[in-house]
Length: 320
Ligand SMILES: NC(=O)c1ccc[n+]([C@@H]2O[C@H](COP(=O)([O-])OP(=O)(O)OC[C@H]3O[C@@H](n4cnc5c(N)ncnc54)[C@H](OP(=O)(O)O)[C@@H]3O)[C@@H](O)[C@H]2O)c1
Image (cartoon, rainbow, N blue to C red; front, side, top):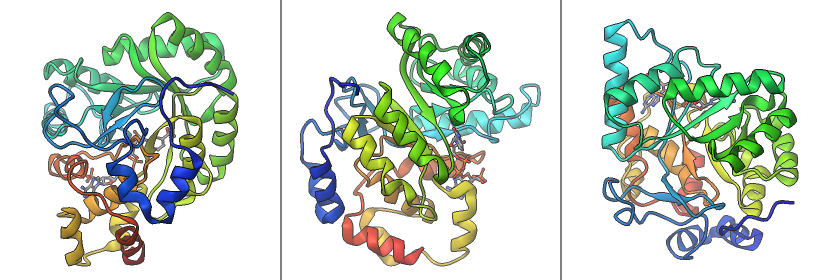
């Protein structure tokens, strides 16, 4: 088992949070990996963005991140599409977002992120994550080098094994690359609840810094074993499909936002959906994807303001 130098949530603390002490744990507890926002100590971030600590190093990242699947897969030669995605990225950055997640599986996304980050002079500001998605050590090395070139990030902040493809092979490379300083953190990803137990098994066997998985109000399986395991082992988390690929919006339809949403400063269902996840102390960042600048502003704003306590989380579950 890997010993992390950083802080972590104990199982007891997490159980206390699940039993209703959530708000206290999030607001207090110096040194907990769940530490809440103290923007201002982190140069350049907009006021009030909630920051979460990466247990292995204590580095803090904004809890509102962004994904790039489908949305950033546009033709770099198409001006209109590039303008739209430049706006999405600018709004995200202006709102205090930093964590952006891509993959060689997402068509042109890595290239487009790299081009737009360069144009916006935001390569350094962005905290970039991408993945290796192929079989074999040498093919993985070639692919990861290309990803870093396309995104313009050296070292890459986070390199993840996508969907556990040839996971043990690539984790060997990632460990060596981390020791050599080519990547800053290593991780694994999946998007299906049926593979959550496999993720837990790998958390227990490898020195992982990050695990990325699906967690949303239509599928809360991650709350059972996976999030507690991440907390216990000091592993940071990225939450993919936070809107269940958009199904949550179709599910809620045109239902009016309840008055109580104002108590946690939510102006949209999107913010309610995200704040529900962000309130979990083992969540490091959520990474919703959008190709709409207004939605990007909406989503990144969910990283600010009060978070739902246990009672509010129950109300949100009941509403959904
Ligand atoms: N195995 C893996 O590693 C894996 C698997 C899945 C996902 N991921 C990562 O996780 C990211 C997020 O997952 P996802 O893209 O599948 O799904 P998602 O973020 O759950 O949902 C995206 C959908 O939500 C809509 N949306 C976003 N913000 C909205 C808002 N404020 N109001 C209304 N609609 C909104 C988007 O439409 P608009 O464009 O119209 O806003 C889009 O249709 C991916 O981009 C990827 O980076 C990783």
